[in-house]
Each structure stands twice: as C-alpha cells, then as structure tokens.
Length: 111
Image 1 (cartoon, rainbow, N blue to C red):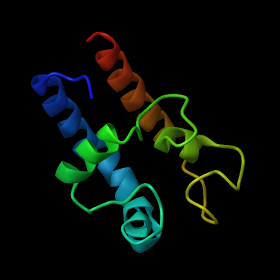
Image 2 (cartoon, rainbow, N blue to C red):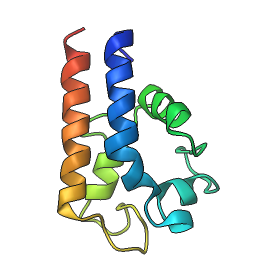
Image 3 (cartoon, one colour):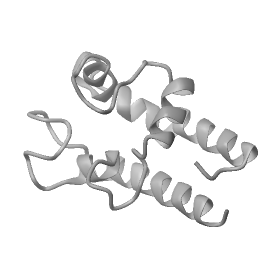
C-alpha cells in the first residue's frame, strides 16, 4: 500500500468503525463468518486490526477491480454478487463502502 503511517491509522479506524460492522453483519452468514471458512482468496481472521491490512495489501479495496469487495457487493450479476444466495447489500451500505474505497484510493494516488 502507499499510505503513510498516519493515513493507515486513520483508515484502519474508519474501517473498524464504518466497514467492519457491515462485514460482520449476519454472523456466520455474513462476509466475515463465511470468509473465515470459505475456500476463497479472501480469508478473514475475524479481527479488524489484522483483516484491514490484509485486505489493503491483497487489493480488496481497489476501485473498479473485479475481485474488490465493492465490485462484488454492488454487482447486478447474481453469480458474481456477494453475498451469494443471500439478500444483496442495501444501497446505503454500498454507498458507505464506496465512499471508503474512493477516499482510500484518492489518498493512495497522492503518494
């Protein structure tokens, strides 16, 4: 990642406050619950302090990337959209994630 230590701390705090509750929602059927055990490139440890740096390093916050969390939860294609076979995320929740991803991308572009 291309964040300064100070920026990384700010985004870690935002991730924990804004994004982590969305990822944890629905317990074992939510993102964290499923991806703690699913065979997937995204493997959650269940700790936002560990999962944010992993997601950042592995590119899960890249805008317009087919494997990014934002692309997957916002997809209209039911075979691509996460969560699979569950209700899609609400637009307001997608907007929270989209803002986070855009802010993170903008900050990394400045480096």
